[in-house]
Image (cartoon, rainbow, N blue to C red):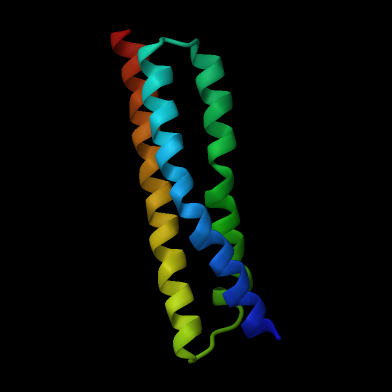
Length: 104
């Protein structure tokens, strides 16, 4: 049962990885529109949610239990890719915030 739950929740995250594209588009637009820094940081807090949820998935389904099934291992690989994608997107957004404080 836990094995099926892990794969099902990983598939939900896999379908959510396209949300990085609007996130990056909004980040670039908000930087060039020169919104106040407080609004940018509040917006960024919303986009840390996928990282927290990925960490929760890894704790629940990878750290405590490990399975040798091919489908499960593919799900773990995809979750690692998605978490790296969201971390990279948030680091780029933080770079935009730092650049906005110094240059705009």
